[in-house]
Amino acid sequence: MRVYHVYVDDLRFTFVDRAPVDEFKERVVEASRAEGAFVPISRSSRPPSEVFVTSRTRVRIETATIPSETTGDEDDGDDAFWFDFDSLK
Image 1 (spheres, rainbow, N blue to C red):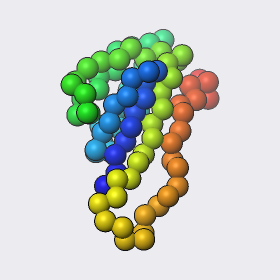
Image 2: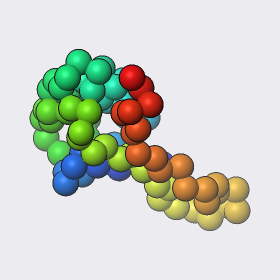
Image 3: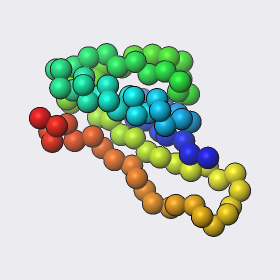
Image 4: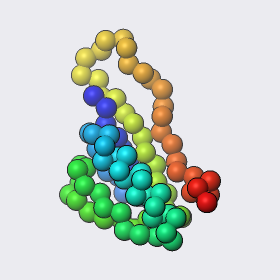
Protein backbone atom coordinates (compact mmCIF):
# COMPACT_ATOMS: atom_id res chain seq x y z
CA MET A 1 0.00 0.00 0.00
CA ARG A 2 1.33 3.44 -0.91
CA VAL A 3 0.91 6.51 1.25
CA TYR A 4 1.90 10.07 0.44
CA HIS A 5 3.45 12.35 3.05
CA VAL A 6 3.07 16.03 2.21
CA TYR A 7 5.20 18.48 4.19
CA VAL A 8 4.29 22.15 4.07
CA ASP A 9 6.93 24.04 6.03
CA ASP A 10 6.64 22.33 9.44
CA LEU A 11 3.25 20.65 8.91
CA ARG A 12 2.83 17.06 7.74
CA PHE A 13 -0.21 15.60 6.01
CA THR A 14 -0.60 11.96 5.00
CA PHE A 15 -2.75 10.82 2.08
CA VAL A 16 -3.65 7.30 1.00
CA ASP A 17 -4.89 8.25 -2.48
CA ARG A 18 -2.83 9.81 -5.25
CA ALA A 19 -5.66 11.98 -6.68
CA PRO A 20 -5.81 14.50 -3.78
CA VAL A 21 -2.00 14.76 -3.83
CA ASP A 22 -1.99 15.54 -7.55
CA GLU A 23 -4.73 18.12 -7.00
CA PHE A 24 -2.74 19.66 -4.15
CA LYS A 25 0.40 19.88 -6.33
CA GLU A 26 -1.53 21.74 -9.05
CA ARG A 27 -2.92 24.23 -6.51
CA VAL A 28 0.52 24.77 -4.96
CA VAL A 29 1.95 25.69 -8.35
CA GLU A 30 -0.97 28.06 -9.04
CA ALA A 31 -0.58 29.70 -5.60
CA SER A 32 3.14 30.21 -6.05
CA ARG A 33 2.61 31.87 -9.43
CA ALA A 34 -0.16 34.10 -8.04
CA GLU A 35 2.04 35.67 -5.34
CA GLY A 36 0.43 33.43 -2.73
CA ALA A 37 -2.95 31.90 -2.00
CA PHE A 38 -4.72 29.61 0.43
CA VAL A 39 -4.61 25.99 -0.70
CA PRO A 40 -7.22 23.62 0.75
CA ILE A 41 -6.11 20.23 2.01
CA SER A 42 -8.78 17.58 2.32
CA ARG A 43 -8.86 13.80 2.54
CA SER A 44 -5.64 13.70 4.57
CA SER A 45 -4.72 12.37 7.99
CA ARG A 46 -5.59 15.73 9.52
CA PRO A 47 -8.95 17.46 9.58
CA PRO A 48 -9.64 19.48 6.41
CA SER A 49 -7.76 22.75 6.48
CA GLU A 50 -6.07 25.39 4.36
CA VAL A 51 -2.44 26.45 4.17
CA PHE A 52 -1.13 29.70 2.76
CA VAL A 53 1.40 28.98 0.02
CA THR A 54 3.80 31.44 -1.59
CA SER A 55 6.89 30.94 -3.73
CA ARG A 56 8.89 30.80 -0.48
CA THR A 57 6.83 28.03 1.10
CA ARG A 58 8.74 24.78 1.48
CA VAL A 59 6.69 21.87 0.11
CA ARG A 60 7.96 18.31 0.05
CA ILE A 61 6.07 15.22 -1.09
CA GLU A 62 7.31 11.74 -0.24
CA THR A 63 5.87 8.43 -1.33
CA ALA A 64 6.15 5.55 1.11
CA THR A 65 5.18 1.94 0.75
CA ILE A 66 3.64 0.18 3.71
CA PRO A 67 4.30 -3.50 3.22
CA SER A 68 1.24 -5.62 3.85
CA GLU A 69 2.93 -8.67 2.39
CA THR A 70 6.40 -9.09 0.98
CA THR A 71 6.23 -10.24 -2.63
CA GLY A 72 9.70 -9.19 -3.76
CA ASP A 73 8.23 -6.86 -6.40
CA GLU A 74 8.39 -3.68 -4.32
CA ASP A 75 10.14 -0.65 -5.76
CA ASP A 76 12.66 0.65 -3.22
CA GLY A 77 13.34 3.86 -5.16
CA ASP A 78 13.06 7.19 -3.38
CA ASP A 79 10.77 9.42 -5.44
CA ALA A 80 10.57 12.27 -2.92
CA PHE A 81 11.15 15.72 -4.34
CA TRP A 82 11.09 19.41 -3.45
CA PHE A 83 9.16 21.86 -5.60
CA ASP A 84 11.54 24.22 -7.37
CA PHE A 85 9.39 27.32 -7.75
CA ASP A 86 12.22 29.26 -9.47
CA SER A 87 12.06 26.88 -12.42
CA LEU A 88 8.32 27.56 -12.88
CA LYS A 89 8.71 31.27 -13.69
